[in-house]
Length: 88
Image (spheres, rainbow, N blue to C red):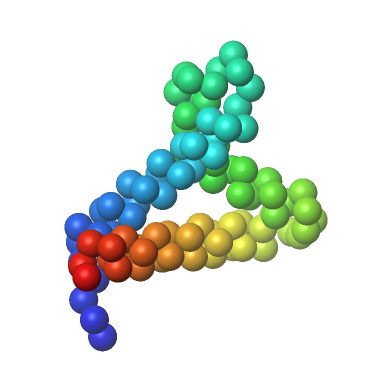
């Protein structure tokens, strides 16, 4: 098993936070867009949950599991992409 690089894990979590913040910023109405409420990354995570809830109509516990899996997959892909670009 290969070792996980701590610097790349940190950078991937930061980039995931930035992605969810941008997602929240784009979806926020214009009066609150550039406030903490508009840039809050937790709103982007709630958006992923709401997407599964609206379009699939599953039970709340299953929606939470699917949202978590999707977020982990996005984080893992970010980790591998950053690792490829930094550690050639």
